[in-house]
Image (cartoon, rainbow, N blue to C red):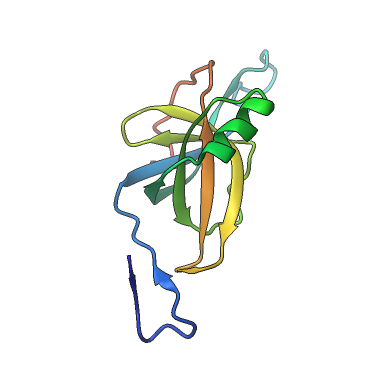
Length: 128
């Protein structure tokens, strides 16, 4: 990471070159009149940078009965929430544990903490 001289307050330029993540929401995907069935609905595809999951974050997750797998940094979007699912470019599915804004980088970014999930969903091809 490097500091750009033309940034108004010398923010660090954030690269997003570790891969691609797709965010999904979990909702009822059954046709009307049929038994409800949970599935994934595509929200957004973004590039990400992998961060180190600190020991404090890991222990905080354990206190909440969540197994923290990793932390990624993506560009800031207001549509991503802790109710969503993330699917990385390697096909692994994670639940979004927390979303935190980052203030000292450019472009505006957020850190997304990913937790291990037991139930795997079928990944739809719609919206990709």
